[in-house]
Length: 71
Image 1: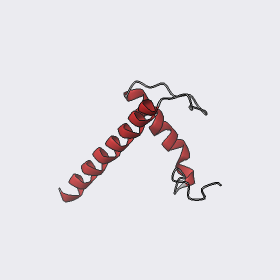
Image 2 (image 1 turned 30 degrees about the vertical axis):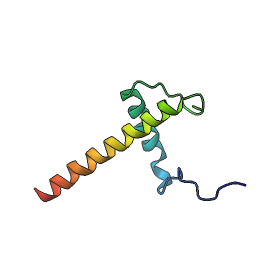
Image 3 (image 1 turned 120 degrees about the vertical axis):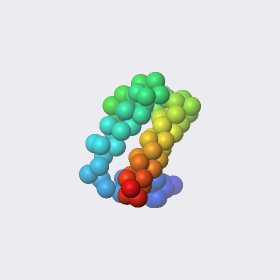
């Protein structure tokens, strides 16, 4: 049975290209090579390091933006 609540679905579909670029940059920063399209051959560790790097960068941006709003 397919899960209709897809957590990887973008809230703003127009942001797909930017998110793909963001993912490629994060992968490069942690030393993982991503291909356009299928990347099912990645290990869980590699995929997790990409996701972790993306979250780290998003938190850094949020903190920077929040500091700029208070200053």
